[in-house]
Image 1 (cartoon, rainbow, N blue to C red):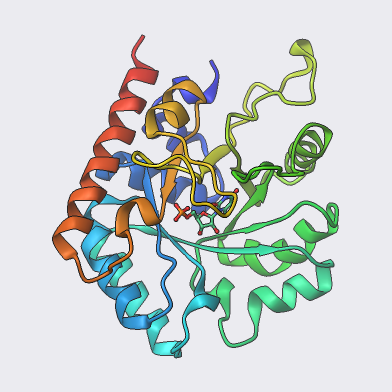
Image 2 (image 1 turned 60 degrees about the horizontal axis):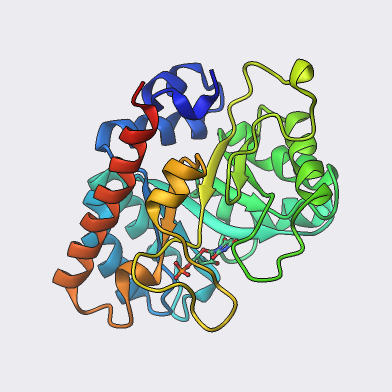
Length: 275
Ligand code: BMP
């Protein structure tokens, strides 16, 4: 059956990539397919939000280059929170260069992403060499890569044959590419029904999720957890401003929003796997 009709636990047993396995197991253990994207500029706010939403998430998504007062100790603190609250870490770096350059960007610089982020992502635009470059660093560390097959923004160029080519690229590197940033399932895309690969199980992590507004006035487009998980078959909802809003000090409001999205995402999943 199509992967999205199976439980996260069943899928965890079959996945060979350690990061994919960890994510699926964490989703099942915490009964949460919610990822929170913590896009704030101060280290203090960053850690405070993660500590509040931590109990409700399977994954924390970071843009570490947004933090204006970054120091290496922030990573130690982030890792401590990931142990305390049991979540996976995904640095949303969106690599997009030649293999040699992305390998350096992934392993080195101030942020040393590969050393702490279980999952990262890349634009498929340079072709398969971006996967080779990143996997030369990430595979020995047990990391996983997501390709951006689609985007949530109005007017996105990642559609049609571009999306298909991204899926084909992923199929050639299934030990390292664990899935996609996309708006719907990618199973069998670019194949005829008799060609489709039975044990293909790509994880679909989906941003552009919000319950209260339909956009942000800068091209972002929001759909509800139910539309994303039940109607489109995606595996993880990624929510940023819908949860932490404009004021990171409103701890109770943030906690309530995280629970609300966690509950909606999980209800949509249960409705999806119901026979
Ligand atoms: P928000 O929920 O506040 O709109 O944040 C969405 C997050 O997901 C941002 O960190 C953005 O970089 C990321 N994102 C997205 O919105 N759309 C995509 O197609 C891919 C993304 O990584």
